[in-house]
Length: 117
Image (tube, rainbow, N blue to C red; front, side):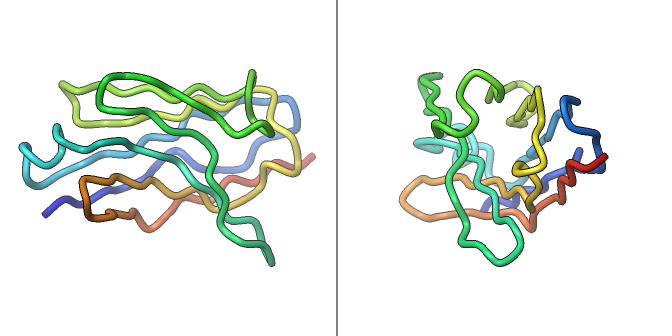
């Protein structure tokens, strides 16, 4: 089994930056064997949406709404996936969730990001 725990959320002004972390614990074989790790977000009253992903081989991709502003990365030694969020906008306000997939979906419980002046 694998557990994912997000951290790094908070309140930030428009134009600011935050870095989210997703720490994985449990089976090292499964952690390293994940096909991909992804970040999703869910804004109040809206459906959960995919934000960014990184494959086991390091390929990254992004939703159009965050492309050029967000960067996903992974530190294999720390079993941690990051989401660097720059030039934040009020519409980025949401609970951000980490997801890992190896034939089974693993989810964290989320971290709240609020972008407000």
